[in-house]
Picture 1 (tube, rainbow over the protein chains, first blue to last red):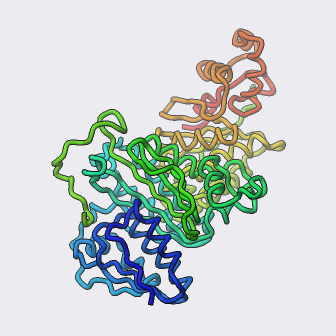
Picture 2 (tube, chains in turn red, brown):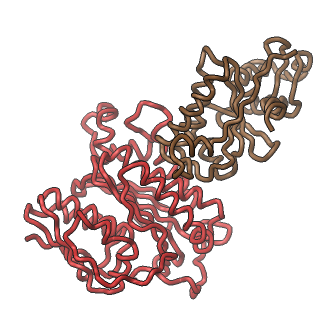
Picture 3 (cartoon, rainbow over the protein chains, first blue to last red):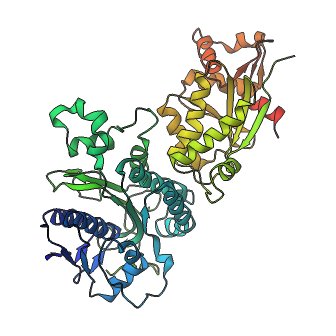
Length: 315
Length: 193
């Protein structure tokens, strides 16, 4: 059996290396060893699901998931509905003791996206919860909840319309006290479908000739708004998401295949384009929205010691 | 007597619940928008060759870009292209959270439409030139412009073309009988409460 050690911190910074390790696995069944997992964000949780799905497909058997030793991490995974989502992806024994309900900490539990009805459910759920978090914790205006729901709707539709395979979405607010000195909302949307190159190839590969690949496909969609549909009204989703994320001084990155492209603000030192990664299937989108500071979306950190400055995950 | 279109009011919130499913509270996803647009188009088919529709978005809380494209932009685009029907649209209840989505999808297709942002407050959204905006605002301010008043509106040699553009794009209505130009808002106010 293959053993894949899950890093102790699995988040937007480490998930690409994790995916690369999944792609290097042999054909034997795999144990995803998450015993030492100490910190996981929506990218990490959803990343575990897509990593497990890819391994299971290649190895033709469900991989096993070794549970984190940390009770806090187990509790957080339970609150984010990870174990329900993991059924059919991993052979895993969910912790028997249910964590106390702290639903106010969770913006959106891990939710499977396979049809339009799932997008409606996500928007319904987030609309009822996001207002308090976006206004009180991120300092966004009350109307921001609409734009936030629009982002989630468009990014989830991306799975349905382009991946031709199911995916997952999750969102959570965190206090990035050390990293940024502010609260952030982290949104992760991932699928294991045909990816941007597969979706756009028929329509756009000819114009790129031998330059066509994951990087050019991502550039075509992310920077130029190309879509596989001939209708000029299509392909707006990612462009509009980018625009709104920029207004909020947020970061958005998309990995598809061997490349990751991003629109990164000044506070984020993520490179805007990474290539040469392992050819991981589907598309993996990460969005990070920081708290507004004063009248600006960037500036001095918020005062420390806020009563609500408690991270709901293990860190 | 002017030949004027009688306005029809269509509540998109109700169409959404009756057409798609009562479980959906928001105008999100392209299939949902497509179903709503087709339901609106079906209602408009019985309206005759000349129609003015007040599409009421007041009850819609979340409107995403995909639905805005289907329900607003596609509706306006199809109407503008039609050779058999002369359909005019005004979108009511376009609050600030909807504005960006509607403006973006219209601009993407090079379209414009008339929206009511607050009761009695009308604006143009979408692609338009400053000259078109100025002329439209003047027609909107006056409500009704007779043929003799049109001359004083045309301060510049390029103004007549801009007015024709507004009329062709169904952003104002010119009576084929009297030649008077009506602001769509005025026609709406007369016909729909």
